[in-house]
Image (cartoon, rainbow over all chains, first blue to last red; front, top):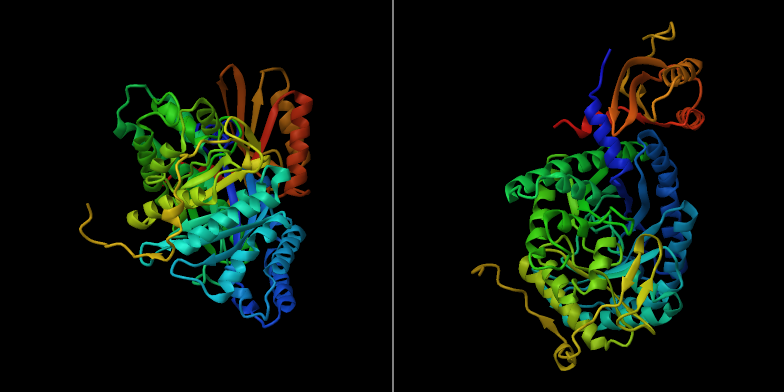
Length: 455
Length: 102
């Protein structure tokens, strides 16, 4: 007869029931490299069939595991090979049609989001890439579950500034086309520097060209678990003690993801890819990364000291999580989306959190400027400037950075955008009013940086 | 603690932890163990404690001889919880083992 430790059981139940420990996403990455044809319709049909073939049981099996362990699996998603690569051999390719077929397949298999409507243009455009960029806004506006991403720079290749400018146009146009829903289309689009190929998180998940036929990637979440553990510590506990506690919590959170991931991969008969060691918030109270900063002793997210708090948190999450899984990858770290985190929303409303502070924080967080709403009349050149700054941080620091920014058409600073669900509520944030126009319109490529003399 | 004569397969896959929590009252243990016996579920160990004024009982059970699906069993236990005015959770045991050991 085996037995059990009641403390462990109580702690696990507390983590799940009170502190919102959950599996944020089970993302099935499907390679579409065998779907290229010379005809848009044939390619789209091949993609549709392949999604149905591999993902038809994803939601059903994930729900069974949710029942077995009473741990919520918040989202079930699919990541595809960048569609720009798959579509460009078609004559007069119609990316919007492909997007709609992908969306239809997503609805058919019942997933929450489907990513990979993507292009990798860090060093330049192909003819297909240019056509792809032109069609992103309509593709996003005419679909529900589709997510799009573009990679604009890498530490090895530098930054494609022509693409940065085009991306700003894509964001603005997508926002215009979806203005009836607070420009939600732009919330399903993200641009990267140093995009990773096995990220399970949206809007940036895609299946890299180096990935296998099909694999399962997992993203866990539990900022509430970490916040409550730190909160219970004595306020005079030193940084070493806090870091150690975060590591222990990150280990436990990650093990839960590893367990579910392995079981689900086995049921689906596909290899387990990676687990993303992540602390991803939701708008639910108590599921917030900003609450962790408060527990650490900052009055609000954005107060001086926040960058260090985030740096330490990010590092400790990786250190603790890495022992819990055989394969770690993705974006791994703490996410700081504004609209998806109750504490960040509160800090933005109070004026404690500004875009400038967020930009500083992105140099030490897992990704970048995420789910930030700005006024709808912000010039495209200013959006391009914001993206350019973020790409620079990623390129120089050899880390992934991203921008998911929503110019909410018809709204101004002081108002709020409502996206609903996981995407949350976003106070419109103030941007620098001075022009970046002449600078960003120089175009061309920013040369790759030196990788020595690191000062 | 054996409530059924047939010893179930002690495969880890068949081990579940049933947690019952709520205000202490007469008949909780009887109600829960009756229901388990009805579904051919063997109780291997029971521990109980008081947490924040709540009675908490944890049972290690073997569902190897369960006659209905796991989902239906879970629903039956949740329904019983409602009748008893308690929260009842049923979870596979391996999550607890893995989360707290390196």
